[in-house]
Amino acid sequence: MSATTTVRRTVRNLADGREIIYYDDTPGAPPRTTDDDRPLPERAAAGHLRYDALIGDWVAVAGHRMNRILLPPRDECPLCPTGRGSIATEIPDPDYDVVVIENRFPSYAPVAVDDAPGEAPFEHRAALGRTEVVCFTSEHDTSFRSLSPRRVRTVIDAWADRTARLSQIPEVEHVFCFENRGPEIGVTLHHPHGQIYAYPYLPARSREILAQAQAHHARTGRLLGSDLLRAEQADGSRIVITGTHWTAYVPYAARWPVEVHLAPHRDVPDLVALDDAERDDLATVYLDLLDRLDRYHRTEDGGPVALPYIAAWHQAPVRQGREVSRLHLQVVSVLRAPGTLKFLAGSESGVGGWVNDARPEAIAARLRSLAD
Image (cartoon, rainbow, N blue to C red; front, top):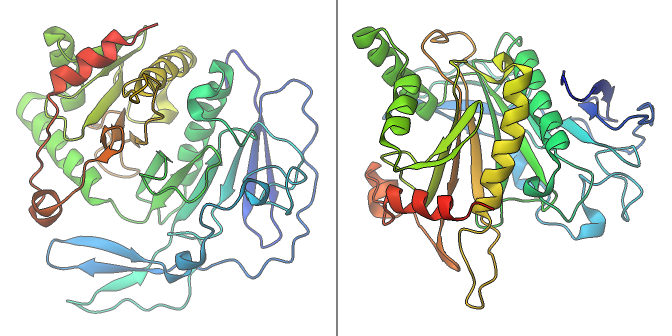
């Protein structure tokens, strides 16, 4: 995996058969041999997909997710190592570096109930795929921003490894790695973690990005993502960070009160294609960006505000358009000001007509001013 850190990968099974994958970068970390002996019920099967004929998109219906845990007290956190709280958790071992777990309450799952496809206009099919939780650290009271560059590099390697392996599942069409941070975003667990969705179809926004990339390539013979990066670099007014292999910038048509894109300088379709130097630089640049984002807003007494955000990796689809797709990370926040959220009200939610009260150039200037 990492050129600078040796990462040991260990695959085990939880009591209900779900996989747990350990990514250990600590020298001398003990073998992962602890069994999960919890009396768990049978693992949740996949729900189903319903086709929205009005707009030509799919909606996953997963009723079992109504029973998932919501913001439990610290000593009942299911993502802490077993032994640190009052319950046996999803991680049987007493410590870990980075762990990936099949979600106990999945939107998509590899096991399906008997669900014959429906007929138009009420088409439906099993939501086959995979939903995983990525635990960034065993420490509960911290954040991604507080990780060491070495640990972030391990997370990057885990994202890439899971992308490669999930892409081999026959039903999977798209792999999406992301982090939701903060109750304003809707997180259900405080422990620092992200998720990976392996979709059995290409979601709407990913489909739109692909369509634009294909049209641009047909007109110019070039990659749209590459042309956008070069244009932002040439303009310069929205550039936030320039690393050796990565550039962070606020997009020209940013939709959110805070929005930053992080793009590699080399044309790569997904996380799997990143080389060691690019992964090392990503760990450094991403931590710099997250540090600035957490200092973007200030309280009345001048203190920093932990920014709620969604960090979304846009990768090439598994089986189509890979030759025109280009990897980038999109980080967005709904926080307009401390205590004030941007609501997706009538225009945004009703017809998708976005209005942004923040000028992208002002967002970028603010983030540039927060350099250490």
